[in-house]
Amino acid sequence: MLQSILTLIVVFLASSITLFAQSNNKTAKSDAILGQWINADKNAKFEIYKDGKQYFGKIIWGTGGDTKDVKNPNPKLRNRNLVGLTILENFVFEGKNTWSGGSIYDPKDGKTYCCKITLISNQKLEVRGFLGISLFGRTEVWKKIIN
Image (cartoon, rainbow, N blue to C red; front, side):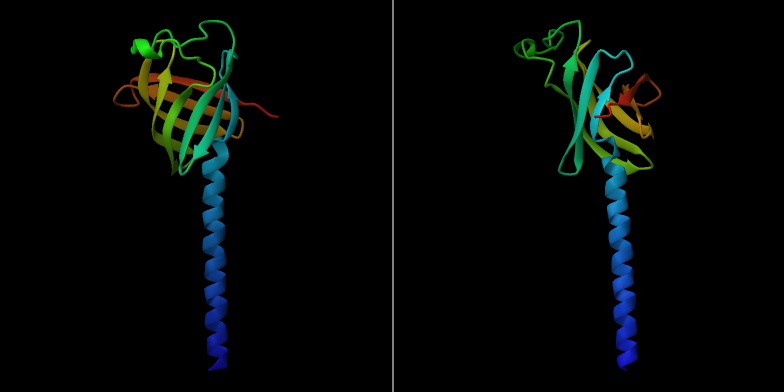
């Protein structure tokens, strides 16, 4: 009887540890996009951060071009600074190095697009903005900034 109880306790603990490890591994994978990134033209830097279970990204540095959101369709927002502006919103980790369900705002044209983010390596992030379906869109590859 005592041996049966001990066996059940050991099995329970082993199962709990395995589930905890799997949960931590998924969190580590989902948080892999956190940090600072630079676009392919090397004229803008972005910080991707987490709020709750969703991921967001803001412009943290830029060179050249407009410093204000002059292309915004809302005249009241055209005077806001681009640096500090959140352009990636509401992404959720769906597994397999992909975050989806979010949107990207493009200050170059003042439009917001559906967006999908794919981590193609520890140092490269594919950001795809599109209309409707992913087939019709534009992809940029961002590189991780190592601090």
